[in-house]
Length: 505
Ligand SMILES: Cc1cc2nc3c(=O)[nH]c(=O)nc-3n(C[C@H](O)[C@H](O)[C@H](O)COP(=O)(O)OP(=O)(O)OC[C@H]3O[C@@H](n4cnc5c(N)ncnc54)[C@H](O)[C@@H]3O)c2cc1C
Image 1 (cartoon, rainbow, N blue to C red):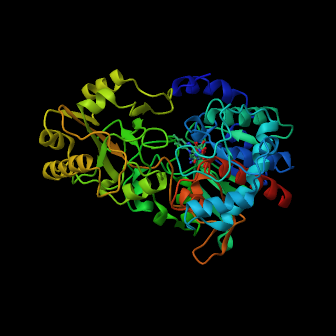
Image 2 (cartoon, protein in one colour):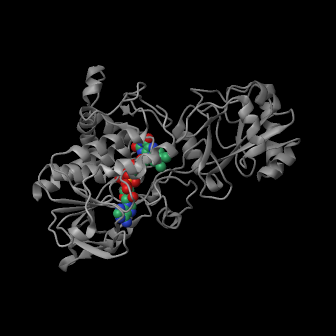
Image 3 (cartoon, rainbow, N blue to C red):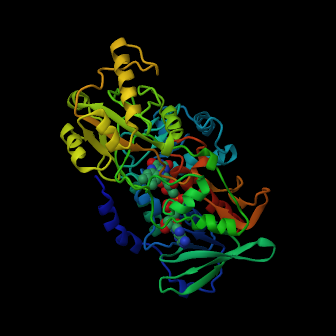
């Protein structure tokens, strides 16, 4: 079944009604072993496994419904050593998964944290499997738009992130021992006792009343800060180019961890993705569509230029990682795909629609129509006019096209490009603006391998834990995009922490 964002959100209130909910006032004064802030990808498993192992768990959620980013996420998960891999005779292990992540990230991911995550990933996927997760028929894969793994270990459902959420909702509704869930509760502060020990949380309930709850263990699972461009810029040292994610994720977890004495790390690992066409020229912008830039799927007929009109990559380079790194070096992480009329008329499909709607390749007519409708698509009768209208340096673009056309004629390109089916020489000319960006928070809260939030010297802050996107892609994938390395770590570290803390309770 195909799921649109609208149909997903329609089903939200029905789903929320299934949960074991409490009202914050009725719960005031009760004793809790553990409080989990945020009922999303990481928070639900943490609360669920804490409660199932005997802890009294309070799960506080700011939105009216649970699920967080899973409503929008691709939901792809990487996990090694699973039952399903064994059934397919895929020889894999957490060690190999870790080695792949360190290879792809060139050693920039946090090995201790990644080891913990990949060790827990297999059992977590097996748990989803046993709980009725509906696997998409195309999985497992070794690559999905990012640098490939050495084994087929990427898993996903028939309904993207919603497939994961369906299992979490069902488990929350049917588990014998449930966490108590309070929705529409906005956690705003930590309660901090003597010696800096975290003893609970304070927040605002749906009637606007301030409430506080006490527990010796507080787990921050409130997602990243993709709904807070100012925090994004402050933590990563560059603007947020892509508008994405769950609107409630304004980075409260970061604010609370910093207030308790923690710190953030990983901003040096920022890397932008490749192939994204923005819906608007004002940034951050949602994605409008994506271009098919992998030579493995479509050889390039076009050239890619930066704001100066200069090429910055061999367009037929097979490595996605190389493209992402080259784009990350360009001004504003922006580039244009430039071509002429014969290419538009004859080349295979260049653009495809982007999730969360239906993902499919555009027809040639749809591509033509975009030049009349969408701000990122520019058409002109001369190269100079195209450059001026698109925001590219005209002299630079003219010079680049001249050089490229020479290269096509001579069969020798200074960038080493081999696939050059035709020059760019017949009007009208076309330029599609692309914007590199990220869907996920990069810098994140520093934790140790037990997921305790730590101070700059490494000492843990008593009573405070963090999981999920709050830890940052920069720690879990380093300076790279490692497929499925946000959803699986959120689920599996959440599950592991819930079990571990409940034992202590
Ligand atoms: C479009 C898109 C596609 C993606 N695709 C993939 C993919 O295919 N594979 C992959 O690995 N990763 C993917 N990701 C990233 C991944 O989905 C997220 O990193 C992950 O789901 C985040 O989990 P989380 O538990 O940290 O946050 P969430 O799941 O967002 O949960 C956080 C919860 O905390 C709540 N909250 C926030 N503030 C408060 C507060 N003050 N008080 C109480 N509650 C609060 C929120 O409402 C939310 O319910 C994608 C992300 C996007 C945006």
